Image (cartoon, rainbow, N blue to C red; front, side, top):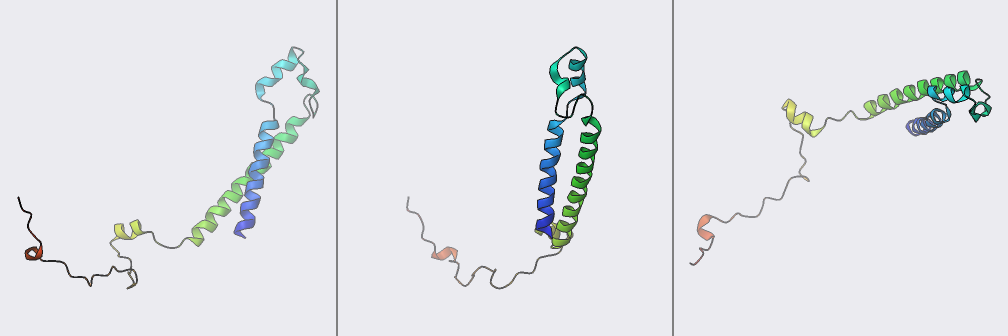
Length: 118
Protein backbone atom coordinates (compact mmCIF):
# COMPACT_ATOMS: atom_id res chain seq x y z
CA UNK A 1 0.00 0.00 0.00
CA UNK A 2 2.77 2.38 0.97
CA UNK A 3 4.82 1.63 -2.15
CA UNK A 4 1.84 2.09 -4.45
CA UNK A 5 1.02 5.42 -2.84
CA UNK A 6 4.62 6.59 -3.25
CA UNK A 7 4.57 5.63 -6.94
CA UNK A 8 1.30 7.51 -7.51
CA UNK A 9 2.71 10.48 -5.58
CA UNK A 10 5.85 10.64 -7.75
CA UNK A 11 3.83 10.33 -10.96
CA UNK A 12 1.53 13.13 -9.82
CA UNK A 13 4.55 15.30 -9.02
CA UNK A 14 6.04 14.73 -12.48
CA UNK A 15 2.69 15.45 -14.15
CA UNK A 16 2.16 18.57 -12.08
CA UNK A 17 5.61 19.97 -12.87
CA UNK A 18 5.23 19.23 -16.57
CA UNK A 19 1.80 20.88 -16.73
CA UNK A 20 3.05 23.99 -14.97
CA UNK A 21 5.98 24.24 -17.37
CA UNK A 22 3.71 23.88 -20.44
CA UNK A 23 1.44 26.73 -19.40
CA UNK A 24 2.06 30.29 -20.51
CA UNK A 25 2.51 33.06 -18.01
CA UNK A 26 0.02 35.91 -17.75
CA UNK A 27 2.49 38.31 -19.38
CA UNK A 28 2.82 36.09 -22.46
CA UNK A 29 -0.46 37.41 -23.90
CA UNK A 30 1.11 40.82 -24.55
CA UNK A 31 3.19 39.29 -27.32
CA UNK A 32 0.10 38.10 -29.19
CA UNK A 33 -1.44 41.56 -29.00
CA UNK A 34 1.48 43.02 -30.93
CA UNK A 35 1.64 40.32 -33.59
CA UNK A 36 4.11 37.82 -32.20
CA UNK A 37 3.91 34.25 -33.44
CA UNK A 38 2.81 32.74 -30.11
CA UNK A 39 -0.87 32.66 -31.10
CA UNK A 40 -0.41 29.51 -33.19
CA UNK A 41 0.52 27.30 -30.25
CA UNK A 42 -0.49 23.70 -29.66
CA UNK A 43 -3.94 24.42 -28.21
CA UNK A 44 -4.74 27.53 -30.23
CA UNK A 45 -4.66 31.14 -29.14
CA UNK A 46 -6.84 30.83 -26.04
CA UNK A 47 -8.32 27.33 -26.01
CA UNK A 48 -5.89 25.71 -23.58
CA UNK A 49 -6.32 28.00 -20.60
CA UNK A 50 -9.29 26.25 -19.05
CA UNK A 51 -8.10 22.72 -19.86
CA UNK A 52 -4.59 23.18 -18.49
CA UNK A 53 -5.78 25.18 -15.49
CA UNK A 54 -8.36 22.59 -14.50
CA UNK A 55 -5.99 19.69 -15.04
CA UNK A 56 -3.33 21.42 -12.95
CA UNK A 57 -5.84 22.06 -10.18
CA UNK A 58 -6.96 18.42 -10.20
CA UNK A 59 -3.38 17.12 -10.13
CA UNK A 60 -2.47 19.56 -7.35
CA UNK A 61 -5.44 18.35 -5.28
CA UNK A 62 -4.50 14.70 -5.82
CA UNK A 63 -0.86 15.48 -4.96
CA UNK A 64 -1.98 17.16 -1.73
CA UNK A 65 -4.18 14.19 -0.82
CA UNK A 66 -1.40 11.67 -1.47
CA UNK A 67 0.92 13.82 0.66
CA UNK A 68 -1.56 13.64 3.52
CA UNK A 69 -1.96 9.90 3.00
CA UNK A 70 1.79 9.32 3.11
CA UNK A 71 2.10 11.45 6.24
CA UNK A 72 -0.68 9.46 7.92
CA UNK A 73 0.92 6.13 6.99
CA UNK A 74 4.30 7.31 8.25
CA UNK A 75 2.74 8.42 11.51
CA UNK A 76 1.03 5.05 12.01
CA UNK A 77 4.18 3.07 11.20
CA UNK A 78 6.47 5.02 13.50
CA UNK A 79 4.96 4.53 16.95
CA UNK A 80 8.32 4.13 18.67
CA UNK A 81 9.54 6.83 21.01
CA UNK A 82 12.84 8.45 20.16
CA UNK A 83 15.73 8.54 22.60
CA UNK A 84 15.50 12.31 23.03
CA UNK A 85 11.78 12.13 23.78
CA UNK A 86 12.36 9.50 26.45
CA UNK A 87 15.17 11.53 28.05
CA UNK A 88 13.09 14.70 28.07
CA UNK A 89 10.13 12.94 29.66
CA UNK A 90 12.31 11.32 32.34
CA UNK A 91 11.83 7.76 31.14
CA UNK A 92 14.79 5.55 30.54
CA UNK A 93 15.00 3.10 27.70
CA UNK A 94 15.35 -0.53 28.75
CA UNK A 95 18.88 -1.86 28.23
CA UNK A 96 19.39 -5.52 27.51
CA UNK A 97 22.40 -7.41 28.76
CA UNK A 98 23.79 -7.77 25.25
CA UNK A 99 23.99 -3.98 24.93
CA UNK A 100 25.79 -3.45 28.24
CA UNK A 101 29.57 -3.01 28.11
CA UNK A 102 31.86 -5.62 29.60
CA UNK A 103 33.00 -4.27 33.00
CA UNK A 104 34.70 -7.43 34.22
CA UNK A 105 38.20 -6.01 33.76
CA UNK A 106 39.73 -4.50 36.85
CA UNK A 107 40.63 -0.84 36.94
CA UNK A 108 44.16 -0.29 38.31
CA UNK A 109 44.37 1.54 41.60
CA UNK A 110 46.52 4.70 41.83
CA UNK A 111 49.27 2.77 43.66
CA UNK A 112 49.62 0.36 40.71
CA UNK A 113 50.33 3.13 38.21
CA UNK A 114 54.07 3.67 37.70
CA UNK A 115 55.44 7.11 38.38
CA UNK A 116 57.17 9.15 35.70
CA UNK A 117 60.85 9.78 36.34
CA UNK A 118 62.00 13.36 35.94
